Amino acid sequence: MATFCLSNAKSFLPSLQSSFPSSSSSSPLSIHTQKLNSRRQLIWCKAVDDSHFPPPILISKRSLYLSLTTTLLLSLSGSHGCFDANAAILEADDDEDLLQKVKQDRKKRLERQGLINSSGKERGYLQDLVYKLSKVGQAIEKNDLPAASGVLGQNVETDWVKNVNSALTKFSISPEEKSEVDAFNSSLASLISSVIKNDIEASRTSFVASATAFEKWTTLTGLVGELKGL
Image: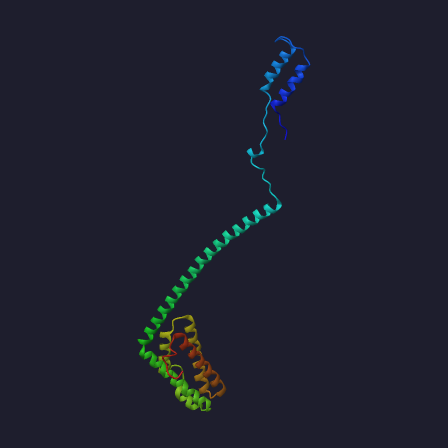
């Protein structure tokens, strides 16, 4: 660090005076001295103290890497927090939807049970159907189609078939339930026709199809526990 000091100028002055003889105030030395005095104001004697200035900012590759890594982790942490908040909102929505579905299902069950309880006559028609199907199954198992025909009748226009259809229609609400009713009616018609024709194999196939469709329907409608013999 270079230091420019006024003392340097003072030490220089005696050597300069020794080179000139003493004279009046107008001597060259006096003139030169006056010139030096006038120049004192232009000479600075100050040591620059580095502590007065902030130290330079040194950024190494390691510090830069750590800074970028920290920024990235913070941004990811913030995003994760947003994801958690969004997930919590979606989970709350799912819980609300599930709760609404449970309430709706319970309401439907209560309405269905109320319908069943208030439809004793229709439940009687369906109970009669269970007994008839049981007798027909026993007859077909013994290859006794005349006995099966005596239970079923000659066609689907008999009163008991009409009564069963009215009960099936009353308790059927959903498309799936109505689809099973259609399957049952089709299989029952085939069963009656096969028995009349004395076709034992077709009668067995139609009987199984009729019984299966009816059991599925009772499960869907909740009547499986209301009827005996299923």
